[in-house]
Length: 63
Image (cartoon, rainbow, N blue to C red; front, side, top):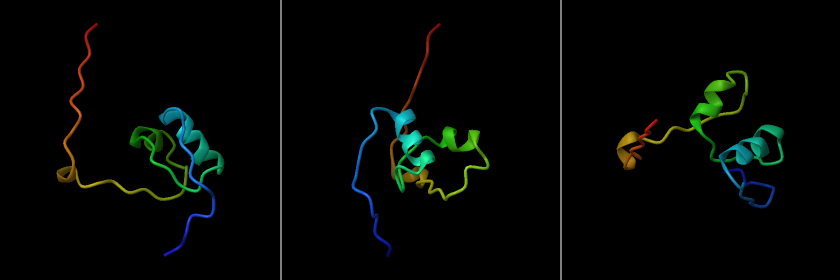
């Protein structure tokens, strides 16, 4: 198994984390699936967790 060469870092939010990964300043990262779908030519790889392995977050909005 290959090792990650760079030290770990954490983004302030999911947007910043995506920028780290997209720019190459991070070798890998946990980013939003919607960010990956918005850039179909982004390259790289993705892993989607089994939906039975976690409890979904129920979100609501009121306008």
